Image (cartoon, rainbow, N blue to C red; front, side, top):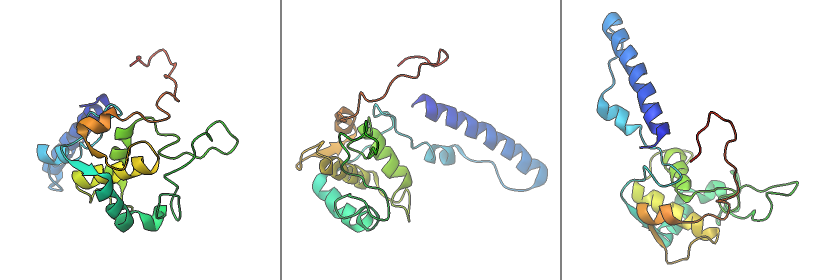
Length: 179
């Protein structure tokens, strides 16, 4: 579990504890259960910590993308009503950088994290882990990062090297510990 998820869980427990006390005093609401708190602990770190069990292939992702993503992101991720997901390599240092999965994102597991928690736009968190792995595989394929015969799971996704992996710098503030 990442520091971020531990901190979020601790904050949620404090809020829920206060809410539980408030519920007892006011007869409004109820205390949140441990299972309900666990259901919100879905974050995935850049190193792959938090990735669930499952697997998905580029071929499976192609079909899911056409069904659930293409209407907003274009049939090949080129953009449409929503941002482009493909392209932009070599543009980050220009006057008009194009920030996409292939040009900007430093860690592949965070693609999974974003798709899992926020997509599709009209039904966030509705995809199964297998479906999210598949869509992630397809997006990485469209960006030339994995081959067409790729199947991803927690172990293999964490090993994917993104083109901009070293494009970010460490936070220089003295109170932020190095990784």
